[in-house]
Image (tube, rainbow, N blue to C red; front, side, top):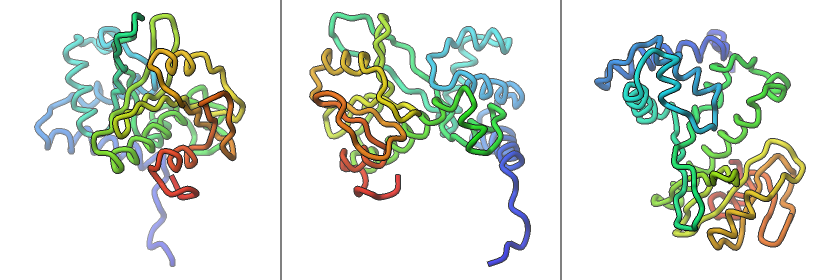
Amino acid sequence: MHWSRPRARPLDWYASYLRTCIEQDIPQLGFRLPAQRTLALLTMLAHAQGSVVNLSELGGSLGINYHAVAHTLDVLEGTFLVRRLQPYHANIGKRLVRAPKVYVRDTGLLHHLLGVPHTRAMLLRHPKAGASFETFCIEQIAAHALLADPAAKLFFWRTHAGAEVDLLLLLRGRLVPIEIKLGVSAPELRGLESCMRDLGLARGFVVNRSPKAVPLRKGIVMCPLDELLATLKLAPRGGAA
């Protein structure tokens, strides 16, 4: 098969996609967002990918108030450009973080906003490579979980003392804590163990680029993404994520 014309370069395609989405698609839905300010906000969110963001600080940088930032985020979330991952709340006698973490959902779009060249080598050198991998895994887990269980919900876990778990998945009525790391070695497990202990959970997972599942501690398994999906019965074992 021969292409009738060259395919667009990612650099050009994402720029055109963003422009079309912000200047045409969103206004057609009835929302009037200043294009340059919206693009600036998306870029700021990309640089804070996976972090708890302060809307007042973002607004101060953009010359707008908290409510204007919150409205823009509502629109960006409603058009599937952004995900706000809510914290999980439980009455456990510990102070828990209550603000959401924010992600640009599409990793290709994230790389474009960060100015990362579209090569594997350049991405792995970038400071946000870990956040990109975390985003990809969260989006894949979310998509598969909602197909398997329409009532599935996603949270993260963080205490004011610093204990954190990247993803807390409510699946078929049960909570599954999941740490997501770019590397292949076993990470620090104190946050995951603290979450499991506080919530009375028997098993947890570390998802990374390891080639196969490896038990780390009692109830904790380190595995690649496809193994996690298969273990949770979200995808056939060995199937593509």
